[in-house]
Amino acid sequence: MGQIELKGVTKRFGEAEVIPPLDLTINDGEFVVFVGPSGCGKSTLLRLIAGLEDTSAGRIEIDGVDATGLEPAKRGLAMVFQSYALYPHMSVRKNIAFPLKMAGLPQAEIDAKVNGAAEVLNLTSYLERRPGQLSGGQRQRVAIGRAIVRSPGAFLFDEPLSNLDAALRVNMRLEISELHQTLKTTMIYVTHDQVEAMTMADKIVVLQAGRIEQVGSPLELYRTPRNRFVAGFIGSPKMNFIGGAEAAKHGAHEIGIRPEHTAVSATEGLWQGKVSVSEHLGSDTFLHVSTEHGLLNVRTSGEVSFHHGDTVYLTPDMANLHRFGADGLAVR
Ligand code: ADP
Ligand code: MG
Image (cartoon, rainbow, N blue to C red; front, top):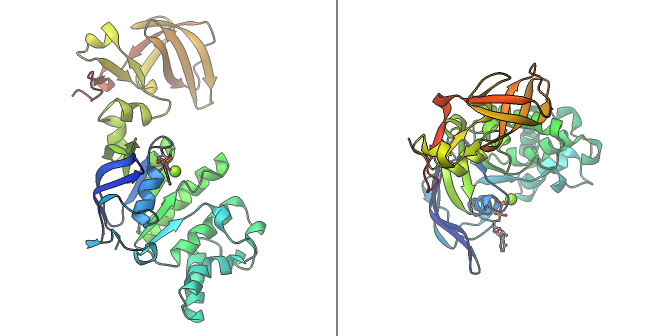
C-alpha cells in the first residue's frame, strides 16, 4: 500500500515559510510528479514526506495512519538518490543489498531479494561489478535497486536523472515508467523539467513558491491550465501571451496561444510579422516571429522553410485560445 495524504503541511526555515499550508492526496499506485522552477520547494516537500525534514505544522498520513512524527525508516518509503550516492568500493550486489544488511535480514532472504531486483532492472549479469565499471544508466538502476529490495510503500525520486546526459535521460525516463508499470507501486518524482513531468506522470503537481498552482493529468494541465503560470510552465516551446487591445477583443486581460496552435503563411493571416530566428529540428521547425504583439513562437512542420527577415502571417487557432483575467486566472 502507498496512499499518502498531506493535510495543512507547512514548512518554515526560521522566518521563511517555504511551504505554506498545503493539502494533497497521493493515491496508492499513482505516479505523481512534483514540478516547478528551482527553489519552489519540491525537494523540501519530498523530504517532509520522507521524514528527512520535520513539519512546522500539519499532518502527514501514510495509508491512513498518522506518520507526521515518525522517523524515516519507519515510514515504509524509499528515497532514490542520484547514482553518485553508490559505494564505489562495493560490488553492485553489495550496494543493492546494503539496506537489507543494515536491517539484519538473513543472507538467504537478502540474496533472493537482490536477485529479484536485479532481474527487474536487467542487472543480473552486472552483480559482481563495481559501480565504476558500469554506464551512467546502469548506475542509476543500481540506485533504484537499492530502493526496490526494501519493498517500499512508495518510491521517492528527487531529480534522479539530472546529472545524466540528454539521451540517457530519455532512456531512463522510459525505464522508470516501465518499472512503475511492473511494480505498480506509488512513485513520487521531483523534477524541474516539465517534459519529464508530462511524459512520466499520472498526476502532475505544479508548484510555485511552495504553493500548489494546479494538480491534474498531463493533458488536463496542457489543455486547461488554471492560470497563467501553469499555462506558461507546461508545454514546449512555451505558450505565447498577448495583452492590450488584442486580448480585450477576446474579453481577456491577456490571451495565450501555443506555438503549435498558430498557423503560418507567406501570404495571408491575422498578424503580420518578420521571422527573427528559424530553428530547424528536422521533424519540426520553430519560428520566432517579431510582430506588433511582440516576439511570438510558432511551431510548424519540418518541411517549412522560412528564413531570417522573411515576412510571414500568423493565424491563431481560435478553438485553442486561452484567456486570462488580470488576476492571472484562466477565464472559461
Ligand atoms: P527545489 O527543490 O524546488 O529547488 P527546495 O525545496 O530545495 O527547492 O528549496 C525551497 C526553498 O527552501 C528555497 O528557497 C531554499 O533556499 C529553502 N531551503 C531549503 N532547505 C533549507 C534549509 N535547510 N534551510 C533554509 N532554507 C532552506
Ligand atoms: Mg530540489
